[in-house]
Image (tube, rainbow, N blue to C red; front, side, top):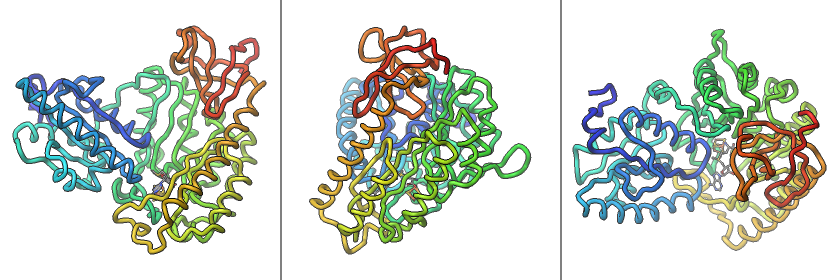
Length: 462
Ligand code: SAM
Ligand code: SF4
């Protein structure tokens, strides 16, 4: 019997191939990779398709209604694959993980009896144990959506080096902000920061395995306050400075931030740390103070303006990205125009915009003045037109410049690689495959709505 409860025999004989499908945010991508790490010592290999898998895990997202509904439709397909495998005398375990699992655990069991196992984002370190239990029973599913007192990070094995040259690294999880539209505080639980030493060790491990760029993740990543090796509490700015000392780690990014948690130390890191890339995703949600108050965002539009001014003063070439919601309950035409004004003024290099989606259990969901679907659609279309124009203009402003590009993977065409600029734009460049993992100066010659094209410009140094 191993410490986690799966006997070598059960792992070897019963469940070998695990298929993990990830929905939603980058934190789910990180969690899925950690689930694979957790299962590897028990004999599981990752499968590319659910078809013959012994274990299928859907790692789900609950942020908007559409994201949650996708899971039930995928479970229809999985149910048929499970039945087909049973027809051939095999057994497939089906697990639902992540935020839909946390929010709708019992409902999943009721609507999808093919599911054997449901567990939330804070209990996946118990996965081997849960599988052992699920293998023993048939007919009744196992539900673990508790918020364990012990942080799961203390029980996860060392992360395996990611396959590529870029990696996500979760440093903070959960949220105490309770924006009135958002499920995260309910599905991910209270804010928690990993100790600095653990983060540095994981980053070192990644770099050792060939990673050159790390994106620090957290639902509210700049609320990070991990215990430092010096016994003091380190904020995100100090953590970034610590990471910048790791030889071989050339690029650092972080996401997602809250405007309220941008402090002096973080602004100074943008000024002083060359490895910290000049691109920041800083959600604003709305440009109307009335809506921001109703959203419980705890910042105004002018507070957001001031923060972006300070950041741009610290790092003049900083490119900004944001999240925006249209049609929040009670949002008037005037409120929406204030959002358009703010966007015009800030000028975003990239942005994500959404129609407000009522989430069960959140305060806004019961708000009386729900905006009609038609108005939401009209506002979203107008906003996206403006955002697309800004993104195109930003991309076009890069044409003629030489930018350092980190090559990540082969492009769609023969002899082409895809990489990223410091501003997170994709760039397609003709280059040999053995250059993946290098940061190379590229002369940008073309720009489209979503990407750039260019050619090697190595005579000019980075
Ligand atoms: N922590 C980040 C912040 O402070 O804004 C946001 C994280 S959330 C996972 C990602 C984005 O989803 C939010 O910024 C918001 O724009 C969007 N979102 C969250 N709840 C939503 C809802 N109920 N309807 C529409 N969009 C939503
Ligand atoms: Fe959700 Fe972000 Fe608000 Fe937290 S700060 S409640 S994660 S939108």
